[in-house]
Length: 361
Figure (cartoon, rainbow, N blue to C red):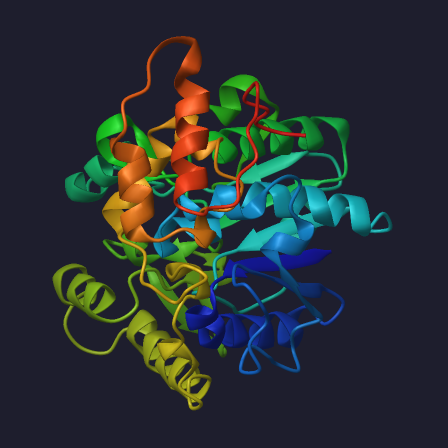
C-alpha cells in the first residue's frame, strides 16, 4: 500500500506528523509526499518520508502554465489526480493507493480498507453519516458530499478510468469557486458514483473530523478509541486551531472527552514538528522569477482567458505590469493570437503559441 499526501512547504510539519503515525501503525506502507514548490527546501524532510516528489517532476505537460492559475490553497489539491497516475505508473508492484490530507493522523491499521481494496476499485468517505447538523449539511452540499481529505483506489481498469477523468477535470477546473459549483478537487467527486463503481465507506472510524463531532459517541476502551462502537482508524484535523476549538465548544458536552484528549495529543505532535519554523515557509510559486509577488487577482483573470493562458509559455517570466497589459488587450477575429504574440514579445516574455487547446497529453 502506498499512502501519500500533497503539500506546499508550509505544511511540512503536518505531513511529518501524519507520516510518523502511518509508519507506527502501518510499517509496511510506503509514505510519499507530493510537493508543489520549485525545488525541495532543506527543511522539507522527515525520516518517515520514503520519498518527496516535486509536482513539476511528475507532471505531464507545461507545469508552470498550469500552476500559475492556482492560489496556494488550490495548488496542493490540483495535482492530486496526476500524482495518483504517477504512482500507478512508477510503482507497478503496488496494488493499493491511498491519499490522506496532511492534517490527518492515523491511530490504527486500515484493516477494513485493505480488505475492501482487494475487490472495490474506488473508495470515498462522505462528510456526514447522520442527519441533524443543518450547518454541516449545508456546508456539505456546497463543498462536496464526499471529503477528499481521503481517497483510495486499487490497481484496476475502473480505478484508472476514474483517476484519469478526475485528473482531467482538475486540469481544467480546480478552483475555490463555490458560486460556480466548484470547490477545488472535492466537488467533482459528487459525480463519481454516477459514472464509476464507487464504494462509499460508512465506517465511522475513517475520516473522523470536525464535522463529525456533534453526537459523535466517541469512547475510549482499554486504551483504544471507538466511534459509536467502530474502531478509530484516523482523524482528519481539518480546521486545526480556532475552527476545531469552536466546534468542540459548540458540539461536545462539557468536561473531559475522548476527542479533547486526542486533540491535545495531536497539538503536541503538530507543534513539535514545527520546531524548525517550516510552517512559515514562503510559497515559491507565489512570486515571479524576478521575485515580484504575484497579484492573486491577476491569477484569476489569467485562468479566465484561454487565449492568454495557453499563449504564454511561462507566465512566471512575466510580472504584474506585463501580465495586466496583456490581459487588458481585446483581441477579435483571426488575428487575436498574433496580437497577443506581439504584446508578449514587446514585454520580453518568452512564449509559444498553440493552434489548439491541448489540455492533456
